[in-house]
Length: 295
Image (cartoon, rainbow, N blue to C red; front, side, top):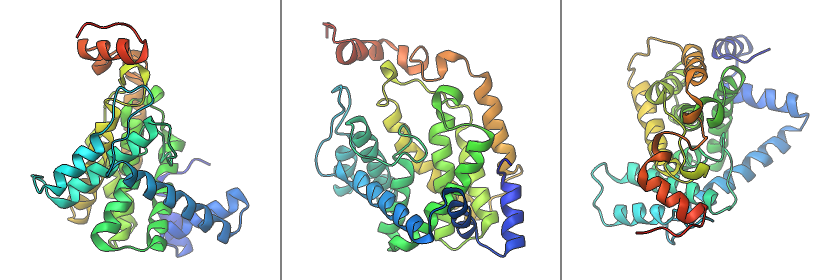
């Protein structure tokens, strides 16, 4: 049976469970692991997320190709200098999202949540919430379970793959998962969690996947930074009771339909969008094709 938000809400009500509890129950059943083993796995994933979100803040980390790097440190230094227009929380969140993205491009250890290309968003969101509010690891792990339930709906009814659905399916899914996790941490119920997840998809619907040279570097890294902002903004809107006139299931269906009609050139092939801009083609030739390029 395909998981839908409607079904999750019905089950939570009928079984008297919060969404994180339902996700834990299903994980135990599907994996045939004990509850202790599930919590241990979540802790290991959380530790990886924490490390990747902070690893590139104090030192420059460059991709294997050498094409991108150092942006997380630049963003963090900018915050430390007190220059951020948006303020502390957004600046730190963006820096940590860039950090995980750079660790990924450097072939370091990351948690694909839900993909490597969008791996900066959920870790940055969770670490930002821990930084701002002091949430414990146990609270963050429950938030991860909430995000997994949201992700399951997207996985069952649409896609996580940029090659199939564009970047909306990668950074959009991650932001949606993270937005719901924020609302859980702030004590809001499944209805507000759903609204936050819905807003995050609506904010990014139609975003193409156009990495330079097909590498998960640029514009993927800045889309991770914007993705964490999408998650936090969507959560705030939902918690402020900004109305969502469509359901999460409808938003996921729209994501699927939009992804299906995106041309192949805009689905991770490197044949459209930013990937074929003159500057991008020069970078591809220099760092990926290893050709001599005139500056």
